[in-house]
Image (cartoon, rainbow, N blue to C red; front, side):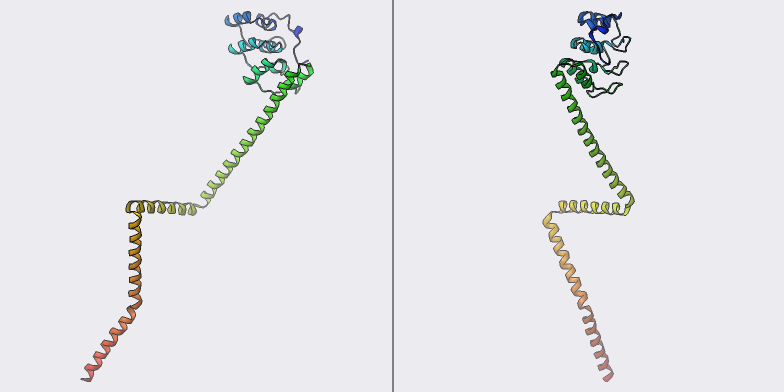
Length: 237
């Protein structure tokens, strides 16, 4: 079986593991303070965290964690401490400290699957089901967020590629932007009404110049006529 029975580890000769089985918090603490390895294993690869979690000894789980126990440790069948756990407070502690609720052992079983096989109480089953549902929703949100990020990056990359392929367009946009900025600074420095008056004067000058050049040929013709008449009088005399 891929879970712990109460009587299958009662004969361990490792003091720390025996203390975890017995739920002896004070002795476990003394052993850890004296230098015992918090990740020491039994013959099936289970650590003290596995054994304490299997019996719902959340205080010892917290103590082992404080002294550096690996919460992600698995036994030789791929079970984490959460796979062996059947108590609400212990499950909440393990999950809140990073253990994934949907992790599978070597047989593909999740903590929820093993809990149902062992026939643990309904509160534990409901908790595990709720945590698995939250994990699925969180994964979907994360996937959606990653897709949005990828789409944004692709859009920016396409815009950059378009600019590289069309340098004239990019240069034209730069010139237009520069002209717009210069014009705004000019208006702010001179004042709106002065700029308006200047435009009006320029328009009048333009009209005057246009009028002058439009009537210039007639004046030339009149001048030539006067010269010719003068020459005729001189010849007559």
